[in-house]
Amino acid sequence: MASGVAKSPGGERWDYLFIVEAIPAGSRVLDMGSGRGTLLKMLVDRKNIRGTGIEIVDEKVYDAVSKGLTVYHGDFNEGLSYYPEGSFDYVILSQTLQEAHDTVRVLKQALKVGRFVIASFPNFGNWKSRMQLLAKGRAPVTASLPYQWYDTPNVHSLTIKDFRIFACEQGIRIVRHFYVGEKGRIRFWPNLRAEYGVFVLEQVAPTAENGTVE
Image (cartoon, rainbow, N blue to C red):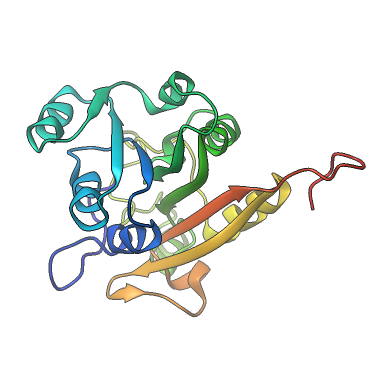
């Protein structure tokens, strides 16, 4: 999970605030790659959700459990297979989707396990990244992409535009979206200006006639 995510004046991550806003009170939530449980704790306290987390780093699991959360040790690439279809109202993939080895499989499985999926990721198309590539000819290092090319956990580098096209091709409906900049929500030219994209997704049901998406 990226460390340079923009924060509100109150010190809370903008993307977390949007996710809390998007999830209805009392929902069943699975947070994949839940870290130290900060987001899950916000959801429990503010929305009274029934939450479960999956995290691969032992120290982070212990920290989350110490907050009274239900968090299990495991790899998010495989953790979704533990749950039957329709187990949750929302599955959260916060700053983890770009780390998935098989993006299509992970996202499709998440959309079976949960009615909705909330996915967020750093926007490689941000103007700062573009300028670094243009000016220096090197892999960009920014607040939203804070790693060197050789130690980054990110398996994929994608832009907001890439993801919107991907969702359409995969028969996934974007229910809501939120674009994050240094000072909060970005409403214009998000592919150029936003540091992160946050999307609420659902699977489009195939038509009865030919099995194609609506």
